[in-house]
Image (tube, rainbow, N blue to C red; front, side, top):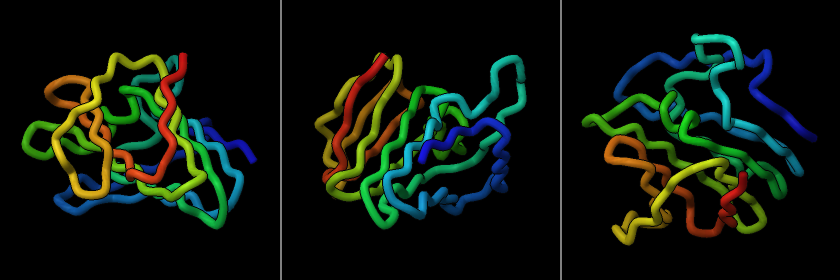
Length: 130
């Protein structure tokens, strides 16, 4: 199964709570690298701070800096958490990213810049792709 944000609209309310997008299935591949469609200035997905890709089997998600930019900023920082388990994969596209040694319990922390962070659960395989 392959899914993309094309035609999908998820607009969560800006709030202090964490909004989660859940992939509920197996062998799913979700491209979340362009929440704003080409030729548009309005994102189809906004205010999602966590994506849960555990599902009922191995799933894959593709991310980019745009994936983080849609998340609500808390304290001036856009953070996106990816939850999953062994067998799940995160592909990070076209990103100038730095792995950070700061301990965040259960997560690997990646920093794009001082205002964008990606936190991926430890069991997930992470790849950097073009």
